[in-house]
Amino acid sequence: AQSVTQPDIHITVSEGASLELRCNYSYGATPYLFWYVQSPGQGLQLLLKYFSGDTLVQGIKGFEAEFKRSQSSFNLRKPSVHWSDAAEYFCAVGARETGTASKLTFGTGTRLQVTL
Amino acid sequence: EAGVVQSPRYKIIEKKQPVAFWCNPISGHNTLYWYRQNLGQGPELLIRYENEEAVDDSQLPKDRFSAERLKGVDSTLKIQPAELGDSAVYLCASSPGLVGEEEQFFGPGTRLTVL
Image 1 (cartoon, rainbow over the protein chains, first blue to last red):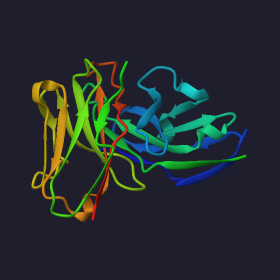
Image 2 (cartoon, each protein chain N blue to C red):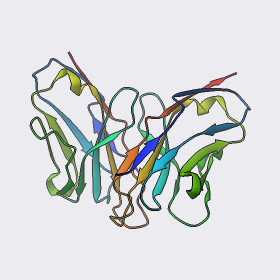
Image 3 (cartoon, helix red, strand yellow):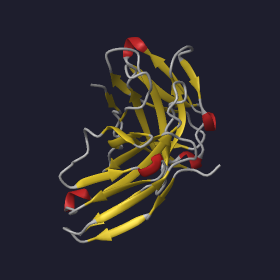
């Protein structure tokens, strides 16, 4: 069974500073990987996804993530954080063997606080 | 394009009462999911539908939870009777269900409080 670990429960960064949110996964083969963002009272919005190919993935809102097979990681980065980025971020892994990424397993999330 | 619609947005009930949540997926999306998100946790899958067929309900507590997706469009998730531990946000998501289009689109959720 797949699993996801987000080691940081809460991160605080200053506006304009760089950001890296960590995600480690456990899965027997190459997984599908996702990052979602959730603002208070809202559903989850997809930031980016990795299925295959280039291991550096670009997403919306200036985010990117890098798939590192050797480290079983898929860390999310942004070079300059904006106050509007404050939210909860979830990493998720999808099972490949079904032929689709239908079965998603989410991490526990990292809450990002941005100080002005 | 309209997103995934859920209602109600908030529900407060007393334990042992029944409750139902409704979801309208994005038009044309064959796959529909119900997730439960406990406070401070990520979403956990309860059930997945491919059209009107429940293809994965292994995490659905079948003694008190039930779901249906008549005609393969809207879906309803029911809890009867509700317990204190059922307090959570219930999220509905949909996807096209096609290989290469696996992104799941989430609704805003229904926040359930059981007193």
